[in-house]
Length: 401
Image (cartoon, rainbow, N blue to C red; front, side, top):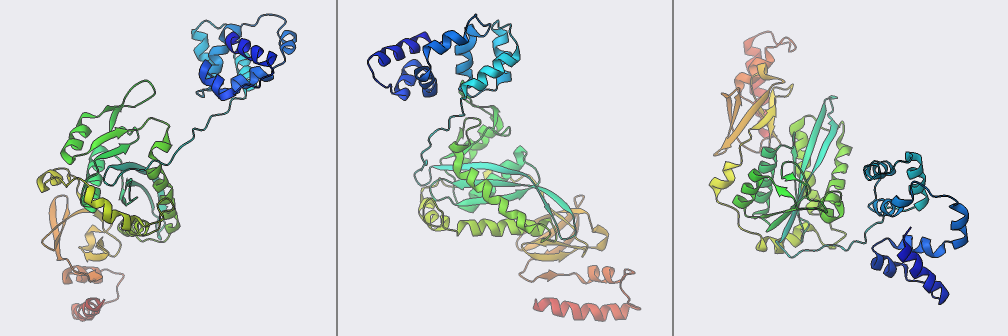
């Protein structure tokens, strides 16, 4: 029982004044609904209801304050037990229910930033998508968005470890052609060792701190369970749900990766409800205010993850929407690729197994790969001459695609 509030209400009632619940709540450090309850309570009712002292009486104020957080009745019960409460849980549960304190929704104001000032980063985690062949892929989508323009960078990844985060962020900075002055994160374990809360600041992971200094941005950790503080990237995460329409519509992981890239471009050319402009058009102004990219050596030092591809049933891999052949003995295996001077190199277990000249053609076959494929039992060729003739015809057609 808050005697101070009760006495203040009694004085106002005598004077015939209806109180300002919000103002009194601020004065006495409680919710306005608590003040309202005291005002609407009939003093005679209290005498009837409380004929004898309750074990709960010394803890009512404490319960009210904890319920305001809000905290569950069970957690409040466990807390006041440590303070000496000896009653039953059901009494605490019923009292919490009688308070009818709803979770108070904070009034939020759209948080806008100057060009080049802030970016926000998060993940869309563990999406399950299914290929045309029924193969299930569990993917993550890295999300980065610039605060002023809403210009977005998204990337498909297979995990969310720190090296993957570094590489995705570097890819994003290259996509932007610069680095925002600060980046807002939630309390992901790859960024902070200890989360920010109402009682203390976040402790930034030392390796991530060094990364931020190399890249030239300040790390801002938002408070846990406050998604509205990074609302722009939260809205982007909701947009990623639109990728689910591609269930049973893609051939392989590489094609899904291309779908994600195309979706990124679509988002950047779609008018924002907040700005009434496309992110692409606003980015033309914002990019001038971004910090410059670090030098090439620093950027490359964080590109430590190999680029991999899975060899399809066609005995091909996909790179930039084009297909490149390997020997059929690698079907179903994961290979690594590297690109330099328009030459695509394909490795298996660190051994170079094929090189291709990169072009915009849809299909890139080596004759020996096609010959090995056609010699399999599923193809009804009777002689090597027949196979060679078929290869000549096919390669001529592919050159026109």
